[in-house]
Structures are given as structure tokens and as C-alpha cells.
Length: 506
Ligand code: 5CA
Ligand code: ZN
Image (cartoon, rainbow, N blue to C red; front, side):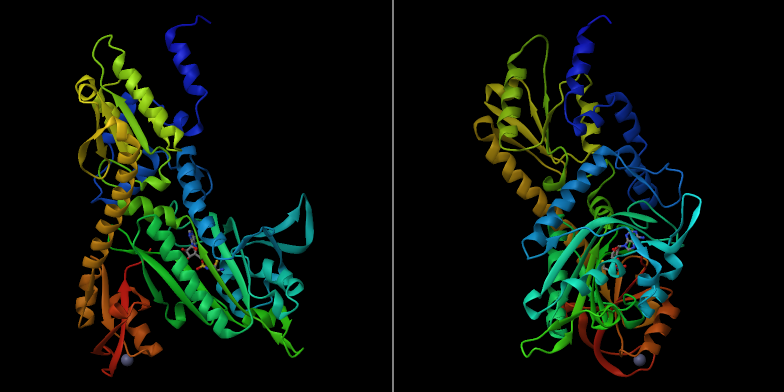
């Protein structure tokens, strides 16, 4: 092979990280493709095309409901899940890992749980050509894998509380329309926590801790959420009650992005999980479980993205800063300055790419905007004369920053970007929650957002409200500013101070 300058360049690119590699595709092609991103107002098309063009997921895998994480998408996922791990580890949770396969006799122990999941379970029935003695379920969630072990692990009140989580893949034979990151048959990023407590009240307090952890998690992703108590008919199979965390998607539908379930002593009863209390008595334990999936990434991408592509909060962006040298002719001073700035930022742990390819600046902007890079730095001869650089934020705005203070400038930009993304999304959510006085109004309003409406709390009235509106009751919001108010139940006319949320849901 003849060694040309081009070969050398491509060789050096190959020694870079996976992220840099996957995004080093041809600029002209990237610019061309970005033009084909449909407007965000056409949300469903925009979403699917964004996943493809920004290289988040490849949906061409030949099994329905199973998708492939591209390296760039996976890099976002890793950072998002690092935040989750950090929050759980800092609140006393321990990470563990349980088997994927659950024997039929364990899976079939809890009646409500079976009813809820039996239509969704994939079964392994053969080992090679031999039929198995005991059928094995691919976990749709892991209560029945974990709790037989908890029976062995929990001995005394001193073992409690027990707070364990795992991040695994789970399988659900979903019959509703499958969608990447939103409704999968193989959920690849299922974070499930399973806790054991002495009393019902201790478990209830843990459900509160869980929803606060989730709100904090979503805040780090700059995604505002609403927490509500699901109506009884929509709770987790086998739970006493379910608290849910919902995000509002751009098309006005809500996405359930996390749930925390109070399991009472239901599973403890079934799996015989008991502890010796201070009086030496054997007492049934109380439990909770709570979960989040890659829906968190669907919300992150959908809520912040725009017509030009991804917009990512700096903490989870695979590339945080792209530096574009503006060079004319043979002058090397700009390149030298660019490399110095790049080194300074990298030494502080920032994820930086210098795009010194010979594509036009416009093509470079397209490419890195599509990838959601939060900050673009441009340095040209004129900037150098002033000892400054132009700093452009992906979510809008440009400033000039002195090169001497570049690190402080970029760190401040990161904070500003995160705060502004959150504030914009929170305002949007706020503006799209409306108090309605009758069900006709609810039916109209849910085309746009989330409706608030009085409800007496009776099951029959709630089910009829859902029937009339053609959408679900999310539940009574935890925040009293949303969940309380004086009104009349739209079905039975009884006065009530309960207000519930109704929305079209994914
Ligand atoms: N064992 C409990 C807590 S981990 C459990 O399984 N709860 S769950 O069924 O509500 O699932 C937890 C969360 O996973 C849901 O709130 C939802 O955000 C997400 N999820 C559920 N099914 C899917 C699916 N098919 N695809 C993507 N995410 C899903
Ligand atoms: Zn009523």
C-alpha cells in the first residue's frame, strides 16, 4: 500500500475512541442526511429518522421489537445509567445480578402477578432437542427470580432494610405497537430495585425515596416529570399501590418513565420471606420494587431534540465540545491554538473533538449539531488576535470567551445549557397541563397535553371517565398544587377535592 497523507490521517482516526470513530463518517454525507430529518412537528417520523441519522439505534434487526444500540447511542446510554448508578449507590442500594431464566414453579407462585404477566412471557422449553423437565421463563421482571433468594437471605430485623438493584435485559411479548426505546420486546436497560423492610410504613417511605430518586435522575437529564398514584386498576400486578413518573412527549402524549410499587406483604407471603423481630417472633417482611428502562433515553432525546437533530445535556453527551479551526492558507498559528485549547479541556476530563477535516464549516456545523454536541468552539485568525474564541451553544446563543479562561467559560456554558434545557422543558410541561371542568373539554385538551379533572375516587366513575374520553387516568398527582382542588365528579356529580390527570399515553 502506498502511504499517502490520506492513509495516515485515516490511520490516526482509527486509533481514536469508538465515539470518534463512529462519528467520523463523511461530512458531505452527514450534511446531506441531516436535510432529510423531518420537522419535529411531525414527531413520529422525526423520532424514527433521528434514531437512524444520529446513530442511536439500528431498527433493522430481524426480530420484531428488538433493536440494536449503535456505539454512539450506547455511549449516551452508558452515561445516563452512570447517573442512575450514582444516585442508587449514594442512597444505600447495592448492585447485584440474578439469572435471566426463571423456573415455571417459581414464576407461577403469585396469582396476581401471573395474571398480569402470563400473556407477555417468553418460555424456554428445550435444551437442544430435549424438552426441559421444568419450563423456564425469560424474566419479564425479576420478582420471582429474586424473592426465592430473599427468603434465604433475610433472617433477622438486623438484615433490614435490604436494598438491591440490577440493570439487565428483560423480555416482554408486547402486543401493542412496538417502538425503539419506548415499547420493546427485549428491554435492554431495565433497572429494577427490590427492597425488603420490616413494616408496611417503612416500605411506603421507601416508595417515596424511589420517586424522589427518579425525579432527581430526570432532573439530571433536564427532563421534568410528574409523579402520580396510578388508579387501582392500573397498578402493578401483585402490588398494594403504584406510584408512576410520567414525562410529556412533544406530541402531547405522556410516557411512563418510571414506576415504584408498594408490594405490601403479598410477595413475602407467597415466597415466605420472614424475619425475626426484636421479640424473637417470625414476622412477614414488606417489600417494594421500582424500575426504569431505556424509555428514559427516549424522553431525553425527544424532549430536547430539534429540527437539526439531537440536543444533549453536557453530562450525557458523548462529545461535549467540538472545536472548529477557521483557517485560511498555510497559517499554522490557528491549528496550534486549537490544539492547545483542546488539550486544556481534555486534561480536565472534557470530551473534545477537533474537526480539522477539509469539509466546509457549514457541513461541519450540520454534522455536530445532529449529534447534539452542546458546545462548539470556533477559532480563527481574528479571534486569535483578540486572544479569544467564539463559543456557540447547541440550544442557542453565541459568546466570545477569552482563551486564557476557556475552561471556566466552558464549564459555565455547561451549567447554563443544562439549566436552560430544564427550564424550557418545565415551562412547556407547565403550559400543557390544564384544569378542565367537563369531559368534553378533557377530550379536546388531551390532543395537546395533560388534562386535570375532578374525580370522586370511585372505580366505576373512573373507568367510565376513561371510556368517555378514550384515554387513561394517570392518577392523582403527588404535588398538591396539581392533585387537589374543589370540584364535582363528572360522572356521579359528588363534590370532591381529588383532581386527577388524564392524557393520551404511549
Ligand atoms: N418490577 C417492577 C418494578 S422494576 C416492574 O416491572 N414495573 S413495570 O412493569 O412498571 O416496569 C418498570 C418500567 O419499565 C415502566 O415504568 C416503564 O417505564 C418501563 N417499561 C415497561 N415495559 C416496557 C417496554 N416494553 N419497553 C420499554 N420500557 C418498558
Ligand atoms: Zn363519581
